Image 1 (cartoon, one colour):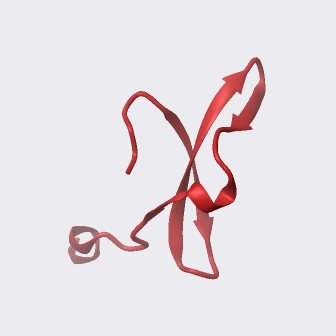
Image 2 (image 1 turned 60 degrees about the vertical axis):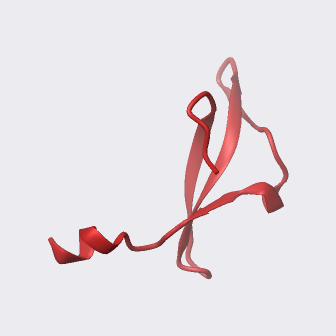
Image 3 (image 1 turned 45 degrees about the vertical axis):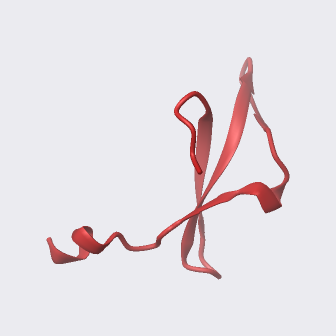
Length: 53
C-alpha cells in the first residue's frame, strides 16, 4: 500500500511486466531507499481504463 506522506521511485520490472514503487528519502542530492527490495509495492502493468482510450 502506498502512503501519501512518503516519496516513491517508480521502476518498470520488464521480467514481471509490472511497475514497482519503492519508498525513498532524500539526503541532499542523494536518494536513499527506505526498505529492502522485497518490500516494493507492485502496481498493475496496464490499467483497465487506459487500454480503452
